Image 1 (cartoon, rainbow, N blue to C red):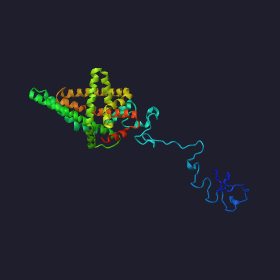
Image 2: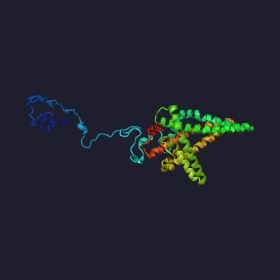
Image 3: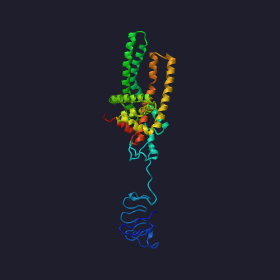
Image 4: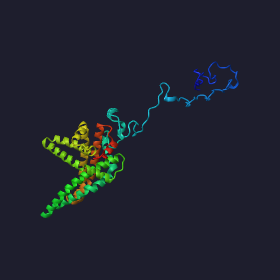
Amino acid sequence: MSTPPPYPGSGEQPRPDAGGPPHGGPSPDPGQYPGGQYPGGQYPGGQYPGNQYPGGQYPGNQYPGNQYPGNQYPPGQYPPPPQYPAGQYPPQYPPGQYPPQGAYPGGQPAYAAADPLVAMSFSDWWAKVIGVLTRSWQPLLFIQLATVVPGMIIVAVGTAAAGTESTAVSVGAAVVGLLGAVVLFVVALLAQGASVYVVGKQASGQEVGAGPALTFAAGRALPLLGWGLLAGLLVAVGLILLIIPGLYLIVVFAASLTGVIMFERAGIGRTFALVNPAFGQTLGRLLTFMLAAIVYSAIAGAIVSALVGPTGFVSDLLRNILSLPVTFASVGVAVVTYATLRNRENPAITTPALAAELDRMF
């Protein structure tokens, strides 16, 4: 039985036995008061005057057992730390907000592994790219069918007609093919912008409509065109001069240029600050994707050649259509690589933060 408190206002320590008098002093002789009752208020065993505090219970808020007021715990006993299931965040860091880099071992919070776009390792990078394909292949296919495929058909028609014996037909077909190539390039920019928007939004769990995606793509098409042309010129100069600078620029621009333009609305100089601190791992990841794309394209080309022949309108069209999975994967590679680089630079940048950046005004 727990020790009862002192009689209210007496300032005296209680006796350890519940049957002692509430005001302190010596206990009566056994049998002096029958049934454990005392003179005056007649307080039956263990009960006390006033609010009548039964054994082990205390006045006020009634703190039974080992519970104490004011969140006080006995010496050496402390409340257990809160537990957060996988994927949930402590209350001081809402989703999308993380403590500064270095606050966790390795510089990355453990729960960042659950982020759908931020990769924690080489295998996780591939898993996140495949996750993009699994999650967003339907809207990506729709975007390609609505934009790129018509341009592919025009180019294929022009290429096939240019091979005819008639000079007039050949010239006309060449003009059509050239215009088709320009159209294909422009709609490819729109498709790229819309695809990045879809991937970023769906990764954060948001529904994506065709209208907002195309609006976003139209707003970023010109910056993507301008910076893309400059990047291509720099790569060409680098390849012509010493080759290695050109290869370096290819890695930097392939890893981050699309993300820098689409998410940050920044220029080409920003790409170097993102990629240089992690150039080695970025190079390795992009090389594996390039090798996988080459192998896939070779297999697809061999199948098309075996079915319809190596050249011709149908052959070119089928090759272009079969290349769509590589196009989808390249969007995933660009977004996952960029998101990983941003998170490495600042762990507060996660998928929810990137999705919010897509909605900022132009």
